[in-house]
Image 1: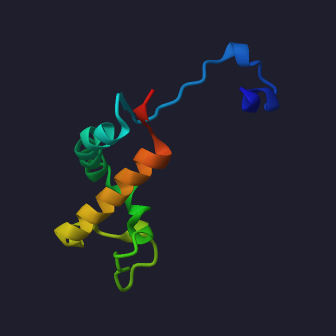
Image 2: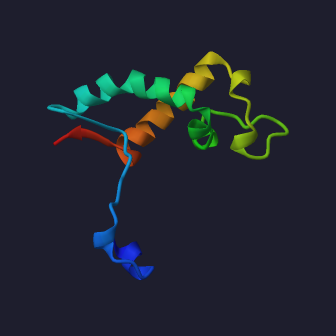
Length: 103
């Protein structure tokens, strides 16, 4: 609403919508385990979303000749490398970029 006001618009004339990955339950640890595989499946299907995390994972080595993560061919990764990136990306979403946990 503040951005609308700053741009000279009346916030009452607009509806602000937010799309956020969400899963809530009674126990944060249980929610993490319930959400883990479905979220990793989603990330696997949306490969561009995980490429940004590839080199943030310390065990992942930058391939020779690849200057940025978006040039990375995920098909060239070993299965354990891809799983490590997916796990890291999931935890980033779980902890920082989604609404997961308890009420």
